[in-house]
Length: 515
Image 1: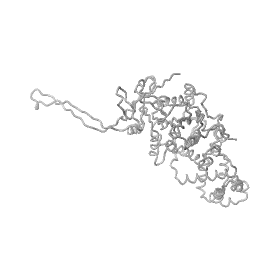
Image 2: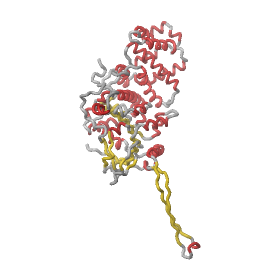
Image 3: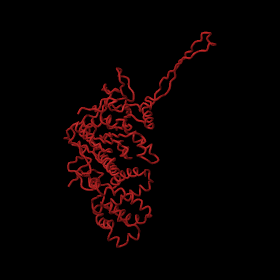
Image 4: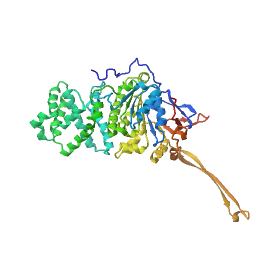
């Protein structure tokens, strides 16, 4: 039975296009009061494909302002998407968006009820495509989750040796399971690793061999390897489990095994076992047909369980998006037959991984729109961690071309925003009036006037301006103000002179939409 009998792996020539053209306006932006919109300042799918980063402090209105405007635009344009959740009210928010835009039936809500289930290892092993079943792809699934786990426990930047040895452990466990059973699930990997020999003596002990799941699979794999043309892989796997692994130093072996089991343990019980280690009745491909998958496992409710599960599915979704377009399809046909999709993460610091920068580098050709919202830059620095955290975070953010800056009290973010928008030569004028002494001007006294000017290089937008942007609510007429910057973009400045342009735009987003 096919895992996804209805999944289309190549663009269908009978797809009925119900989404906008790449250069068709999704949003029209304009004046700072949000009333006068300029048709020249439209924002379209081509812009969305380049990625969006929204910054705004707590209470800045980033989610209900620019966030809401973009989300509704995506739903109205019939995009499919994946929504990651950090706060407990995000499901109801997206249900309201879907209701307002007529997309309620397209919501696919993944939660602890396990109505929708996704066996991630079986999916990656059996999916269609030339990369399916490759051991290294399966290993990288775990690596993405472990990256989030290490950050959660303050262990980012682990020595590359431990990362390599852990991947080696996973690689050999996966190969053994696939060669022996032609199938794969997390409980099987757990049994292989926890029943492996802990010493050279144990590896040849008859009692251990009779009781070990690892050894039983080695014997089965020995009989299957030739038929599957995997004899070389089997020999490496057998030697690893019977020779190399038992001879590792006890401390080294203990660290790499516990690193795997501590992560796998949460997927082997309760909610995550039901969701990710059972059968499969949904997958990333559902978004290609217009579904909006909401992973209703908010981090604020489920803590690291919610984070691990969402990071795992996000990685699988990103990989599926990257391979969905055939290399030989031209851009015009892709635009007509392949539905755009979006990745949405509010409080994105919980979900960002090193792979995001790689994904965003090719998102435009994959017709994928990434929208990340977070409070400030330091939240990303902490998320990436390690000695190169700042450069890694800035490299990732640099790949998100549209940046919307809301009200913020963080000086690091505000200075970075001002630097991003840039400086220009400006004239600075000064003048003065001073009383002259009676000795200089006679008995009646007098005054002395002076004036002048100089050319200085100054910020186009001063850092303190970001602290004074409107944050919505009744006191701000339900308007949230943001400063928009997009690499390579010239925005038309408000006024009658349409030739006046600048590289940033001040715009107010309404928090109120028609019911």
